Amino acid sequence: MSSSASASTTGSASPRFTDDHVRQWREEGFVLIPDFFSADEIAPILADYERIYGLPDPSGSGRARVETDGESIGAFRPDQFRNIDQFPYEGGREMNMISMHPQLIAFARALLDAPQVHMYQSHTWAKYTGEADYDQVHHCDFSNHTLTVPSDDVTLRTVDFIIYYTDVTDAHGALHYVTKPDAGKILRPGTVFAPEDKQQALKAVEKSAAAPAGTLLAHSIDTFHRGTNLTKPGGHRFTMTVGYKAAGNDMISFHIWQQAAGRNWEAIFRHASPEQLRVIGIPLPGDSFWTERTLKLTRARWPEWDMTPYFEAARLTS
Image (cartoon, rainbow, N blue to C red; front, top):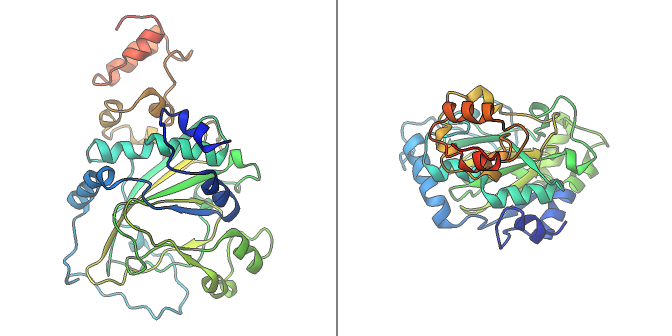
């Protein structure tokens, strides 16, 4: 599948990714694309992060100092997962719609070689120097995405995108990862949880995902990676994680949008195109789901959603 073809399916004339990015993700498990999002695109979202989560005191006062010797093996701690919220967000249009950006949809289709994809995860993450010990062991993410394991069939796999809203240097706790080929030289075939005696060997070949604001990181959920500590005094990093899978792949899940029915979905319906709404499970106009009854009941549930295309496709008047 060519990247140009995949981008055109979303109405975007110029793709922000290449076939080399697709190849690297499939072979290595990680790919970084700086400037995937422009400064103008992320500026209003960054302002929402600052409003919602706040900025730290540049001096770092008021937050506990986390000391690390750089040699110990990390661990998972509850404090690492503070300041996480799930879609839809209490932010503006830009903050809510970037998870369904046409270029993300196009890239997910290309990576997964899937004609249609479903967004199954979207959450924010704000980290601050000293608020937690963010140093982790090398691990894979699939244990809380599936009850099985990632498929050998790329179409049945999944991609996690991480969007950088601030510069993420090593001093800002950049994620560190090990490519699939490098991990294969250290771990036995089929290893899914790296044993303690292999952690230092993985750290010896890890790469940094440090990159500027606007970067998109794409990784597969069966590649080894770890969180690292923020060491810059008064430092912070704002990111968003967005997960896509092929539509109809019931083995993969994370957020269940129906469980968030009380959140601000009007912010999504007011701005999303039918193609964007399709990636969260809403049938396109003209689908057999849309009958006179389902159309009118859905309009009553979401009165601010302009459903004209759906009514027109069903040849009904609104």
